[in-house]
Amino acid sequence: MTAASEWERLTKQLPSWLEESRRESHKGRPATYIPELAHAPADALGITIMSTEGQSLTLGDCGLSFTMQSISKVFTLILALMDHGEEGVFRKVGMEPTGDDFNSMLKLELVEPGIPFNPLINAGAIAISSLIRGGSPAAKAERILAFFRELADAPSLKWNEAVYRSESATAHRNRSLAYFLKDNRVLEEQDDVEEVLDVYFKHCSVEITCRQLARMALVLALNGKDPQSGRELIPRRYVQIAKTFMVSCGMYNASGEFAIRAGLPAKSGVAGGILALVPGRYGIGVVGPALNDKGNSVAGVHLLETLSGEFDWSLF
Ligand SMILES: NC(=O)CC[C@H](N)C(=O)O
Image (tube, rainbow, N blue to C red; front, side):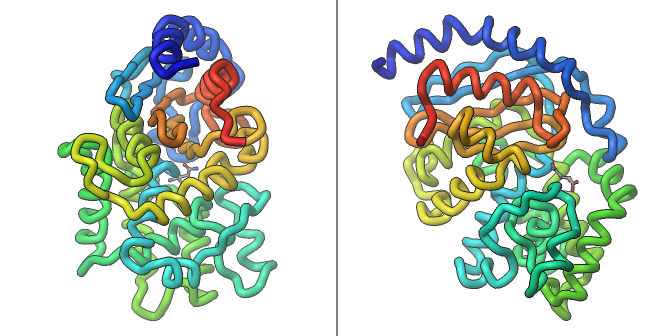
């Protein structure tokens, strides 16, 4: 199928595929462990697809803004790589999936030397937050925001104050993880645990839309190049590392299943967002707040699997 006829079929069929996937929403429910996330509309579903050739398609509940949550971890990883290189980052986090829940403490204690298995689980992303350069926690959070704004082409992007406070007030488990990391010396002498956590909560709470998420994905689909100017925003090698983690760990404990069914680099968040890409071709942003038991958007996963199957997008 040529790119033009694929786009034509996509434009024609997407509305019915979207409604079909929306009907899956009842199989899940919005996250409640961050109280502020519980208000999200459970059967909402929206998607934006942007092509590397400049086309864009937005459908469904795309007026809905939501917080990035774990999707932000892909980009803080990239920023930490840009700040410290591979050696600096992989002293603090590993390269392997865990097989445990995203907020699990188990392997930190059981497996020497007690560094998080990968940068996309909570422990790993907290360790990554400690690596972001900046003179103060506020300056680090602002640097992250500036980076996200550039990738999303959204100068007004900011964190949602209510969600940030809601998470900070209830993050007992993430606090435990962070103190554990301090004891394991992943967080070092100079790293104040509460300050590191504050940076983490802020980047998780950045509020975004499907369209902006698709723009961030498009930069990855272009191997780090700005879609408009062609300027390098991210070194290609770091995009490669990020994409690899997205395939092996991006959908938590359902990453293997998603790799078999959709075969695309993707990252989900507990607010129901999923960022996905077809390398060289499309950047995709999806939101559907009802989550399955693995913490992924039920309808979002269904829609991405449908699209990938219909167009044979799997990388494998
Ligand atoms: N899976 C997620 O999206 C988790 C992110 C969330 N901020 C947390 O720490 O629990």
